[in-house]
Length: 118
Image (cartoon, rainbow, N blue to C red; front, side, top):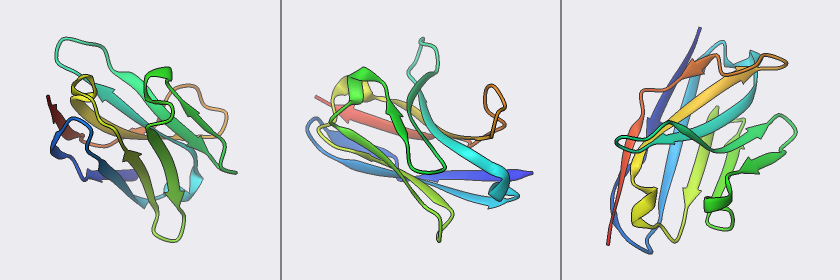
């Protein structure tokens, strides 16, 4: 089992920044792909960014140049630095983890709310 706990969400004005953290515990060493998803009210959950062992990253177009995903192996934590936030970034943000070669995601966090006011 792997436990994922997100933190760092909150209320911020448009143009501001937040850094989300996802702390992993349990058998997380078997995970090699980490991602951040978000879900706004009435919308489907969407992938924001992911990172794999080795450091390759992937971002959805709407956040490229504004968001950065990173992983601190010593702290067993994945981060999502969000800059130049927009009201349309408002959503519950979820951390996810997956094993190598497995489609989809094995574990999810409980989510953290990000609200961007205009």
